[in-house]
Image: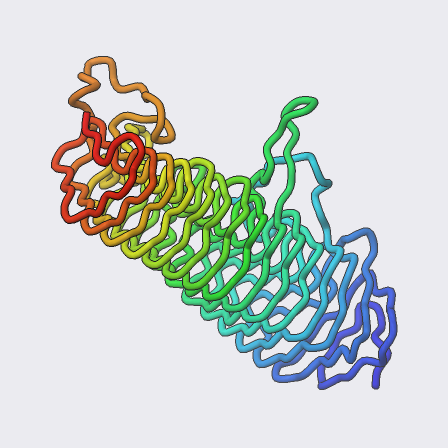
Length: 429
């Protein structure tokens, strides 16, 4: 067994002597195909600066059983492939002070927030069964492909539990990112709970990923997917698949996916949030067998989205089950010209029980519930009317209003079952 030393270069298999070691300059792996067994040893940095363990251009390295704390990033790998990082514990990395800022989700990798593991331009990396709790971010990935991320715990991060930036074709399975939240003050007694902290942040051309059986409860958001940059450039996150995940109890949104296409959500939980799903300016999605209970505003809320299939979901005790609307924002039409209205939703064989309104579809709305400005030369009754939505074979029971449509065209209502709805089954204005 070997005692780690400050700034050491590792060029062969090594097993550390258990203990606690102050290594402010960290350790660098300088050869391929070797194994670093921490054997329970802990390396500690200084003032949460620098990197604990660094790899550049390495292939086939295994890092296991190592504890790292008090660095900016605990483990850093750039231009690497075929790594395995397993059974490590990384905590107390660099963190923006609590109760200060609204987070910037668009930071490049060289300005990234502190975190447990930072992967850059790396492929075929396995990150398995690591403890990444109590950091700013658990796992950050930039420009990566074919990651396998399983069984990791990134609870209690004040930024992002798991972060994907131009990271595609990956598997995230059986991970936990509960309580990833923060507060941004806005006055003496008011502020924003969440401040863009999230369990899973999926942005800037991160596509074709599979998220299965992950937990992201009580976060600022649960799963946050964004496909439009602050410069209004399209950076879509398309064709991701979410199965059996839980994003419940967010003060904001369990599953947010904006300006993207082809994403699929099956058998997920989105309960007791402000919104279960927020899918603004997105298209060609599938939501099937999801559960949305007790959401303060809506189970599903979408402006200017089109061609969604919503089937076999359960909406219970939400203010709205499904809330669809048009909201004309010219600046968004240049990057996404297809999202020029709300149209072509297939809402079939769902169950709506004890909601305020089971479904509301309306033109020219703000957040779907109040009038939104239209161009002065346009007739509000004729402008930007949602069209060709189909509501078929659903069960509406004990809602205040089952279905309400306002200034729409071609809305189809067929073969629905209405039972004991308090005010009305179908309202069309």
